[in-house]
Image 1: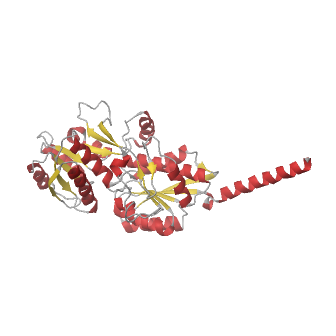
Image 2: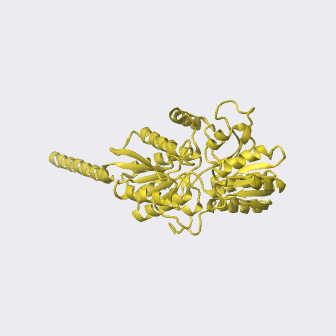
Image 3: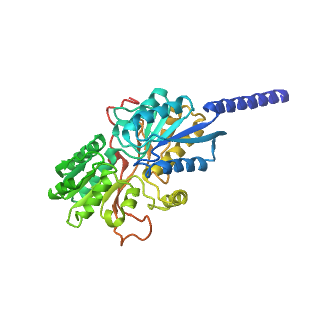
Length: 403
């Protein structure tokens, strides 16, 4: 009996050691490697760029720098807002540098190019600063995740809430490329569904040198709400013009369908006051957002955008999934990421869907007046919480993952 017990004990011990060795061997290349592919010097560098790299590094450091006994390594690169450059870096990272996960990737055209490489190489990619619904729609792949927002969520969140509050007539100033068109289309659908009406729109080209004529057309429309359907640099220049032309003082509401807190900081409250927008994250929402944002501020000397906060959130959730699954095998990690709700300082009621979209609550906010602001970066009044399922909507039938 005694020798049998010892033998059984030794067998169990050896089996345990063997299983532990297998679990550790499932981490490829003996490390977990994450690449932040971003804009380091262009127009998206302030809301992403070094701030996204810093947020990712904070997540790695807070996780202890190791997962399942293996080191976590972080690298970054500048894609220069060029799809071919972004795709080339992604291919090299996946093939040569053994990168397990690519994150961030501002500008939808670059993001979609990187997503295509991730699908080809069967490696994971999480986008934070690109809003095209195609990521989880017609181009969806089990290797790609969209974490922070899409154009539908921002457009629907803002348009629905403003229309419900009495802003029934709308005029759009829409950037004349796919991103702007998508914002206007999604917003228009919800405006019409809620008893409103779009009375017109104008479509300036991207980075238009002169926008005054477009703003004057919007003002002359007498629409209750002027919707800015586009990103930088047009959106911030249009907000400046709206202030110069006394749009809000004249009784019209200004709604930004994609505006970030760094945009408000650059514009100043005197110029941006009264603007209404939807965001996935605001640093001053509660104790959790303030605590993390204070740490970030100490490193970057500015508050984080929703994209940068989202990088931290997703990298942390990814690393936890690697730990829990005992492997960095992409599809096993993605499946583990879908198992648990995402409830952290960034996400409220978050859930990663089968189509790769992380659905979570958003907030509708209004930019404060200079008199209302009590401290630096105290920029928003929270008007409403928008439930994730209302903002993001159901899965796109075009995506067949899991069907």
